[in-house]
Length: 450
Image (cartoon, rainbow, N blue to C red; front, side, top):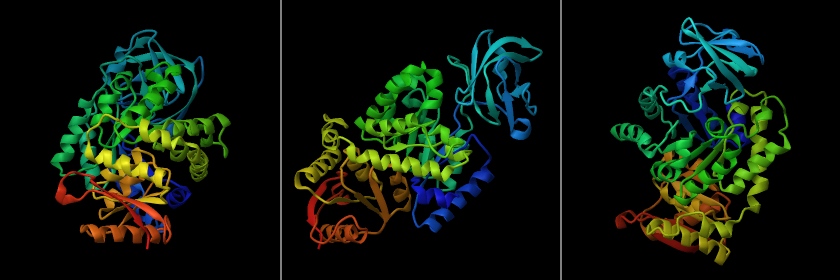
């Protein structure tokens, strides 16, 4: 199935560390790498750190049906749950106040607190639904939730097992990224960090967080739609995507994008429009969650999303984005060179762009300006090749290249022809950073493919 997903168009596979244990995740990572070999294409693995997220415990038979109007007890005791008693691994659950709202399963189920009862909390089910083990629990406005203290152990796991990207859950400010950054630095790792925006405070601090998050932002609409009034979510989504673009960082739009495909083989028209609108907003990636985690048609959901993206991308305002997506006031040399290179694509009708890069930064800056031609990134590091799968419009390949300028340019032209993005006689843009200059991206040449 993993090979089918990759073949259907998956670029990044996300592992939610809130679910399952290290041994199982390690086996999944191994399976993904084998599936990549089978499919003949590398994908990135995104590790999603648990963060201070409340989750219910184990349910008997792994599922319970909560009906509207019934009563259910929330308990901090590590019992096996059922439709009458739900375990929550948080002592503070007994301090919930009467009439407080509790949401389960990304807000699909709503409970209203009635009264404490023998170390438990009695709740009435106002909106029922099917609940499965380890689903998330949200209490809007609660500020004494448990910390994500186990995240640093998962950071060590991620480094040990070659995870390509890390998502940090429930950040409120840029400072919330610091402990993870410090641990990565201590482990001599450069895994990019993606800040998940799930709280109102994070949405308000989006500019600051986007500046600090080395891997970009994730618009996590499930929790965001509970922490904020639902009608505000589309507005916040657009603002977050703009904040990431302004800093030349990628944005991921996530949660319930094709939710009906958990059971159905076709999405609704509204879902198709939702995916397309996120792409029109400028998102780099659209993410499937339960559709591929527990859905009945995972590969078909990927194919549908791929089709939507391919139909939408030709209609994007590429030339306009060249001057509006990123911060035009920046004095950064690398960003200015990348923008000039993309501008030349339009003015000179170039066939493609080739970007040799070790860290991936040059490719990220080029992608941020949204060239409307194929971008081939070349890197000697397999980690970079995988990470660049997150970026809009970039295909990355593993290859060593010469650092001497003339040889570098010839190598890039040869690879452009070999990978089918340009033909003999085509003009292409080549942009790179020469290491001896220590200026980042500082080279741009228009080159004719021999």
